[in-house]
Amino acid sequence: MEASYPAPAWLVARSREFTASGATAATPRRAATVVLLRPASGSFEVYALRRAATMAFAPSMYAFPGGSVDARDAIAEAAGEVAWRGPAPSWWAARLNLPEAEAAAVVCAAVREVFEECGVLLASPRILEGSRAGSASLYESPDRLVGDVSGPEWQAARQALVRRELGLAEFLAANGLAVRSDLLVPWDRWLTPEFEAYRFDAFFFVARMPEGQEARHDTEADDAQWLRPADALGLPMLPPTRHTFTLLAQLPDIDAVLALGADRAVTAPVLPRLHTAADGTHLVTLTTEP
Image (cartoon, rainbow, N blue to C red; front, top):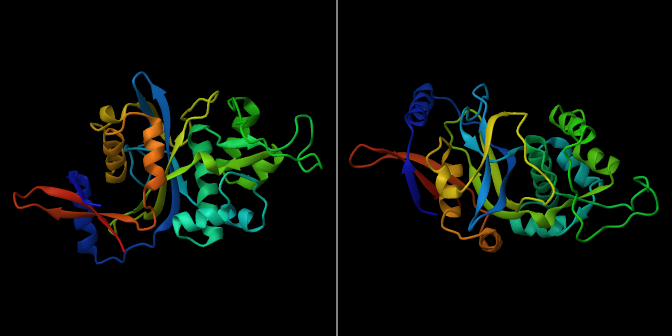
């Protein structure tokens, strides 16, 4: 990958402070990010959150829903506690070039984070209506997605997930749900620069917004917007978000986005690096790590 973008002054200052301090780079944490897409007249829109000014990482920056893999994401999948629709963990392991348990944990984190941050649930019912979770009447509906999840019981569960009082596997089992891994299409893998105090090894996915659901921001964001990709480029955002919007702005519709994502390589992370151009301009250059 070869691309460069103007570097904001605060990013340059942070890099200089890190270099002057002699500090050791933090170990990146595995993470998942979901780029939600919905149709718009003649095009499509993307959901972006503005992170609260009080956030330790990327305050006041527009970003996509996402966050770190939780330990329980991996534990639940290793124990076989998460029901799946779509590509199995073994497929994801090959696609992401990760051990199977780690790949499954990334997918689980993507589903959990997008529900926590904007109330969108990428899941399907897995039991007959009227049956209790854990009964002998389990089945997997191939097409039916969860509909409206704005009710108080869903929001209570969502807040319990945010507070880590509830794990994804417990939440899904209690509601008779299966992860819809087929709704997630890998897009990119990003590595946070060494000078950042909070570093992530983040897999980006694109996903079509489920019908009957609405995105909402009431956790870590102080604003959220559905934006046409070209209209988003003037907003403050980190290089991975800006680069994603730049690529999306070149595509005509959601089908084209998903088709491109199906063929994109996501095993080698992209690392933004700062450098100074001949005219003295500070740039962020995106380089693919081996």
